[in-house]
Image 1 (cartoon, one colour):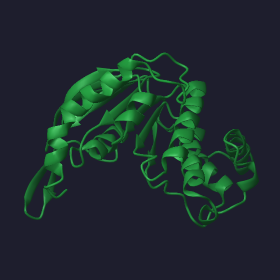
Image 2 (tube, one colour):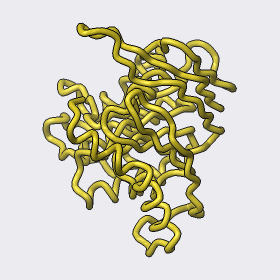
Image 3 (cartoon, one colour):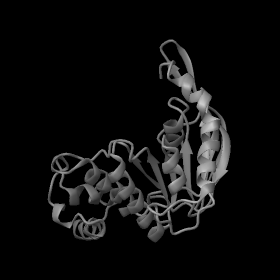
Length: 258
């Protein structure tokens, strides 16, 4: 599957007049590619994901998905910082929920969901409820819930933003392991430059209000990646290059309300 975003612009109608969120955003993502997006608060990163997912309509421009599955099959799944689990459902039923939406019978969807629950080491929590899980465990459930319906595209909006650094590193490795097995297209929004470098094949640097893509930065790290190994010096150079692109806009955003 390939995604092409062509001159995407999004203007919201606010009480005090039109509010431009994105302007003329153009890029493409190839099959099985992991693309990170970084940028300051308010530059339209989440809006961009929602446009790609079809949750919002662009004011102008279009999103083209080549090689998308037939009607009736999932094209994409989204994972948010707040994992959005249903508190009245068990872990197993939360993971299986998307399959229910696509008409999979109860026995099959529970079998498929249980295989994913087992894969991420949560077997003993399959019958637990979200309120009984740690934040990291809940986010792990949110990730496998997105994978279980087998969509070709996974959209992730700061999924690890609320986690401590140790849990975050573990789940980054977990995500790469599952992605390496299933090879989805992933578009991953984060404020963390280090995280984007660890995970991505390339990074789209966004800035401005309305948001635009300032630069695409390739990440020359071989896969599979061991995130705990010492990183080559080039990674530090990439980090400071990206920060140089963002610094002025980030400082401005501290003084401007979202």
